[in-house]
Image 1 (cartoon, helix red, strand yellow):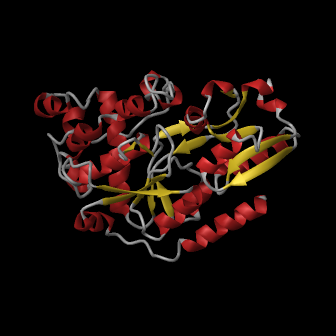
Image 2 (spheres, rainbow, N blue to C red; image 1 turned 90 degrees about the horizontal axis):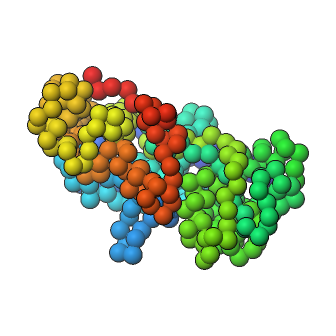
Image 3 (cartoon, rainbow, N blue to C red; image 1 turned 90 degrees about the vertical axis):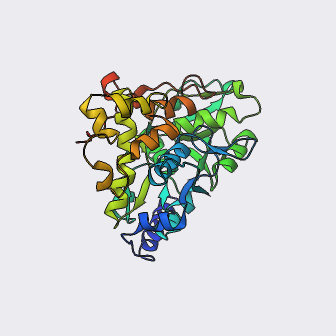
Amino acid sequence: MKNSILALLGSVAVASAVVPATAATLDDVKNRGTLRCGVNTGLPGFASQNDQGEWQGLDIDYCKAVAAAIFDGDASKVQYSPLSAVQRFPALQNNEVDLLARNTTWTMDRDTALGLNFVGVNYYDGQGFMVRRDLNVTSALQLSGATVCVQSGTTTELNLTDYFRANNMDFNPVVIESQDSVNTAYEQGRCDVLTTDASGLYASRLEMSNPDEHIVLPEIISKEPLGPVVRQGDEQWFDLVKWVHFGLINAEELGVTQENVEDMAANSENPDIRRLLGADDNFGEDIGLTNQWMVHVIKAVGNYGEIFDRNVGPDTPLKIQRGQNALWTKGGLQYAPPVR
């Protein structure tokens, strides 16, 4: 199985040579009038459609943030492309999307061999396991001999093999391409265990017919830094998306919110806030935007903390605590270089 995965990754790496990277992504997006954003096919809290068919989630808000920065606050100018795990990298490599914001783990191979650049981490995650409560399992170390449902073409599949091998346990994999099909197979009893990123487990649990019958085990077996991805070869576009991400984090740290951003832009005397919101210097122009780029972004989606709380936080159905995704000033890992 591992060889087949490596072969898949190798084929994806070769695909990166199909369309050479160009340094005109921003111009292309402006001329087209829309940002093409690759997203998950459906993951509550990160990328899913509501009853009205509108896309929502943490990754969706990142797409909206980049669009708002480019189109002077119009966050609606996004064309969403739902992509499976197998489809996501070729779609970006072949210029079918401008940006991939699809709960994607930053790894060395993906960052070096596939012709891609990760712009930052918008969610620190880790792989876990979910089982039925009546299985009477309290630890992943009790899963030897279990049948495990896992999505193909992901780091999840490799991590699963590594974990069971390291703990001298056997398992029977059920490998399926789409996460929806993985979830269905698990709920139908084709496997004992469902494994993916912990955030995805909480989202998948909500979609079960009886969520209370399933529990997420305590073990986190991997590092899964998730973040937006762009093609290599266009430094301006890389910088633009990267600094939208950093701007969202800096805004939270500085107390700039969706509600107060206009007042802050007009009246704040804090030099860090003035630079972030374009009152001083020309940082927006340096990345091909107006100096009010972050005003537009924050008015459209809020700061990083607001995006987190609205989509996956304690007051949402997922009820995820900030944890590692808290600001560095509050014991977390979210930290951004300064705008200066």
